[in-house]
Amino acid sequence: MKVYLLEEHQNQVKERIVSDFFMRNYVNYVHVKKNQKSLFNIEVFAKIKELLDEKELKGNDFSVCIEGGYFKLKNGYYMGDVCGIKDANGIKFGIGYLYEISENMYNAVRRGISLGTCIKNAQKIRSFSNHYYGVIEYLTGNTYNRGEGIGLALKNADKADYSEKPKTVKLVKRLPIKNFYDLDKECEKALREKM
Image (cartoon, rainbow, N blue to C red; front, top):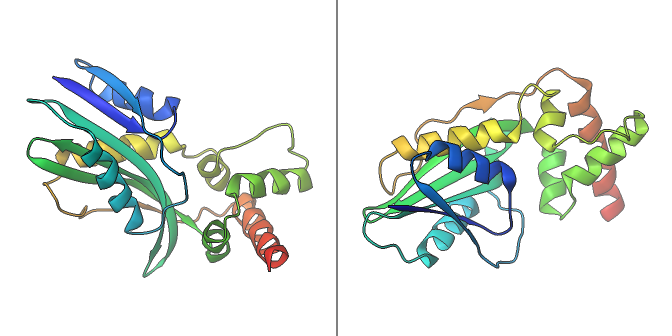
């Protein structure tokens, strides 16, 4: 049995988590050339299905694809990871933690503005320019990291039913830290400048 991790570019966090999860099996990394873009709502699932369908599987081999995305739900805006696992029986989907973001952050990404760049700009204002956080770490004050969300998405996909959307979602509500508000202001400023 072989496991194929399909990714658009090398991502050490994804590779480490998938390799640890399927410890007994050899994981093959397959880099597919696609136009990278931010994914929103149902686009995340469609992109994963598209990538998984491109890989021919033999026997009991299976493939894994993990994509990050942005989600507008009834109760707010979120970002997080979705995992798809495909085998001979079909595709199973799982969602990791969904981290709350503001409407300004969501709209900024929709307009092509990088949250990472906004974080760097916010850190300069607060004189943290020597230390760069990932978006999840920054928003949660290092309480969470992206790897935890990827790991949960993979576990949830492994336990899921075929061809069904995930039934349970773990939301990480906005933590009361200054970073969230700083990033929101920076995104609002970037949106005004882009008009």
